[in-house]
Amino acid sequence: MRIGWWGGALLIGWAWLLSWDRGPSVSPVALSFASASGPEEAHACTGILQDSGALQAVLTAVSRYKTTYVILYSDDLGFSIESIEDPILLSLRVGVPAGTPAADLAQKHRLLRRVDYPATLAALRQAIIDVLARKIDATLLWAPLAGLLVIELDPGHRLSMLPLAESMPPPATFSSPSDSSAVSERVVRCRDEVQGTLEAYGVVPAELLAPPNSAGEIPASLEPPPENIEEARRGWDIYQTNCERCHGPDAISGGLAPDLRERVRRLTYAEFFQTVLQGRVEKGMPSWRGLLKPDDVRLVYQYIRARSAERLGPGRPS
Image (cartoon, rainbow, N blue to C red; front, side, top):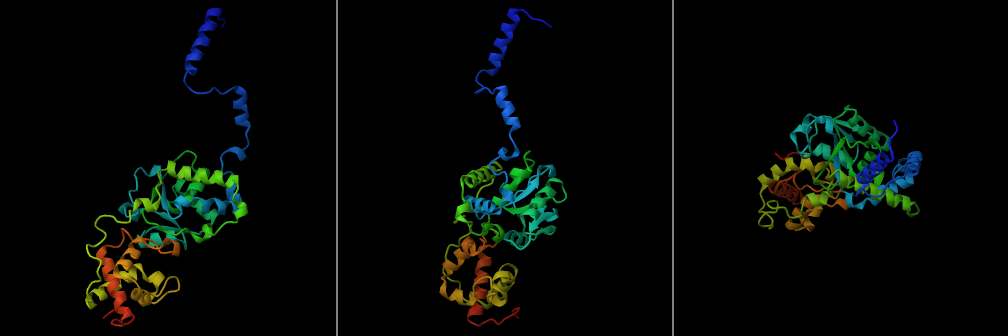
């Protein structure tokens, strides 16, 4: 169909109105160039997963999320997971990297249908693929690694991330110090993209989710409680459930953490209380804030103090 000169002018004017206040235009040449760009220019982290040195450098550089873990789940579930204590998690199949702090979290919160994956890059990448394919319902991962993997695997933003309010040490597999020579502009750009991705998914660093002095968690008095052998016996049950794995049976060092019979003599009750609540993430001890109540901490203290003074022997108190 042919149009007159006035028709051409009208079309030009209409095109100008459509383009007004929409930012710089993109020419067909530029569009062709963008389309022809190879996969290496897809994003700043392209190829990082195949470069072990750069991968390690990127993950350790995302320092803001160094002690943060997240639960990834598909939006196809049709509901949101509110916290790691959400009862719905008890019925979900949750992928967990075995032998890592994530596995400790899963055990601590008694995730009944956990599915163990090897703590390798390939296996954890597969865990996210399995979530997207609904072979499992969710997976629990260290935040920097989760951010890097979803850049590749979730371009459609089909996953949600729930940050956990418990600071935990990073997994040893992915957090050993990187070679300084690997810290390049490429690593910095990828680090920024990983951090930006976590922010876009609404991930808040763990330490910001659990203020050090949350109301109601610090007792009015931090004076040591009077010795009470009955409380010490009750404290044994709490110790066995939450502390025995690292600190060993009977408060004797299990090799992963100090012998608490000696340590309790050196700490004030206030120092003991704060250490349990805040953890010592740099030493591998998680925060127990939100998991142990003040009364639980007092009972554990009574038990360890009784063991230190030899008022209780090894094994289950009679």
